[in-house]
Image (cartoon, rainbow, N blue to C red; front, side, top):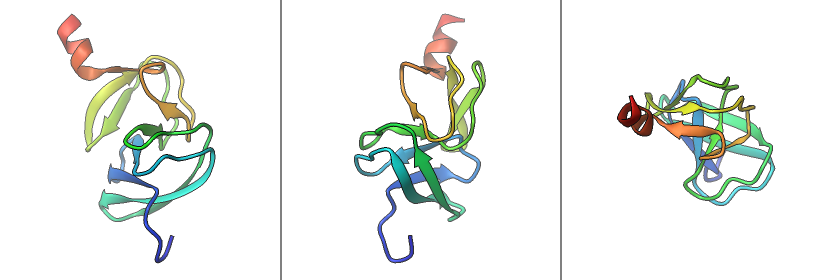
Length: 100
């Protein structure tokens, strides 16, 4: 990634999802954490549109999804590293709290 623009960003080291900063196709992608600066490479399993999320770690059904260093959602299915994360496999933490 040296000298090239990142294809995705993690907001914090330790986030479970990364955010695409351009439309991404399946295959190897490079990026970094905004807070912490760690560089990462992932193999995307599916396309990920600009501004959308993909898994940076394996996430089990029912586990929290962490972005910005905070819980933003809950997995509704097992999610593999590099898999697109959206309404088909996660639920917003706000939605869950409003239904409690």
